[in-house]
Length: 156
Image (cartoon, rainbow, N blue to C red; front, side, top):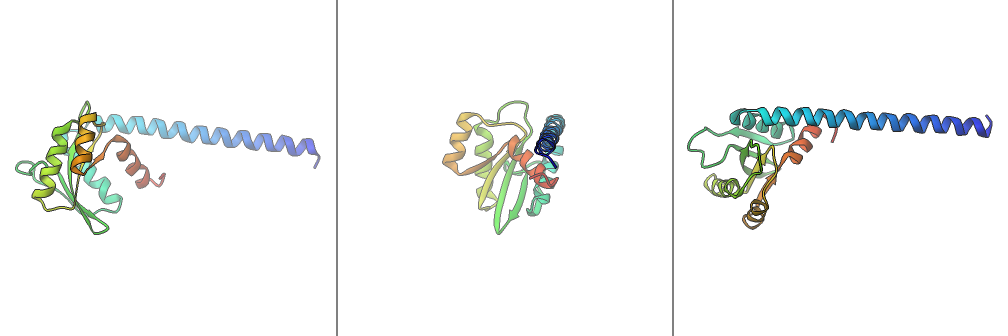
């Protein structure tokens, strides 16, 4: 093979790789946008069960959705790697505030769990993030849900 032929093959191969990677990225972006719309359109209880299933698919065990009323702000109880979790789910149209963090904090203690978390289809206000840091509550936002979905689908 001549040098020119090798160069041409290298350019064609590089172009094919770039087109393939770009196609995968566009597909992922489209899938994420569609999934985000589905999450945003879920009812609260439907979102809680979706989150519970997502956690179970990502290695959490003994995943349980609590009863609707009198749950002390906790929607899901779960365990992973010997660590117990109390999780408050918030399917919101806007930013999640301090109240959700406070509920997770109170619920974590009520259920005697090691870790409290707020799981949402949105993001958190700055005061909520500050409160979560002080109260040691995990903030699982839309990006975390996408991460779990990617892991579940073998894309992570």
